[in-house]
Length: 205
Ligand SMILES: Cc1cc2nc3c(=O)[nH]c(=O)nc-3n(C[C@H](O)[C@H](O)[C@H](O)COP(=O)(O)OP(=O)(O)OC[C@H]3O[C@@H](n4cnc5c(N)ncnc54)[C@H](O)[C@@H]3O)c2cc1C
Image (spheres, rainbow, N blue to C red):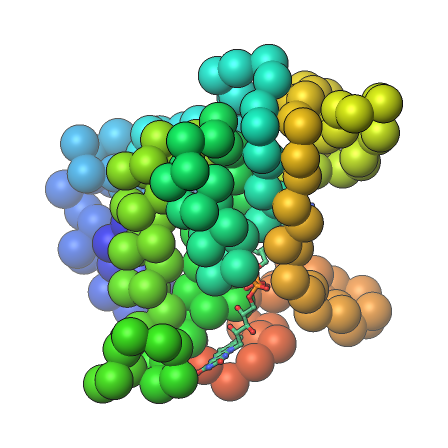
């Protein structure tokens, strides 16, 4: 989903048509302005996801395959599941692409001799999965997996449950967070766990 980042103090005029800026306090941030002019204040990933048309609720009770994680491994597995005519769902707690989605250029992925940005690779793989009828649930986080004879029950953090004949765990890795007080709230804003070109813009404003 294309977006522009507007820092609260530096280029705030660009948001003026949508907001009574004087009214905003730090308690309102993060503020998201949607394409149709709708303004979300102190918003969450879940709220933004719903507003841009993603869904976190499963359509069916039973699936042939459920893939957990939508990095390159999960997306590839989901494309194969869908293309074989299996009822396939993919569950992602953040956004399609996983770690690869943050890479500015991947040079060693098969079929892209000139390289491809992680975002473009994810966008293509996501579209390919949807083409094969894969159901994409996001943001949704799998909390627990329970075996029930030949079925697997996936318990989501939301309290919902999905049942599948097969489960593929493609959860990749997560960065260990620095334990110092206050660091969590600043992750992705001014504390970064990797040197990626795409965050340079946030560091220079
Ligand atoms: C900045 C950067 C640049 C890179 N560049 C390259 C490169 O040029 N070439 C290269 O070969 N590799 C590169 N890598 C490494 C490559 O991106 C990873 O090896 C690859 O993404 C791993 O894919 P994956 O699908 O196994 O896991 P991940 O990409 O880690 O995806 C796992 C997904 O699972 C989701 N998830 C985890 N737990 C749950 C849960 N409980 N419920 C729901 N969802 C869950 C996560 O949110 C995530 O989206 C790069 C990595 C980074 C960070």
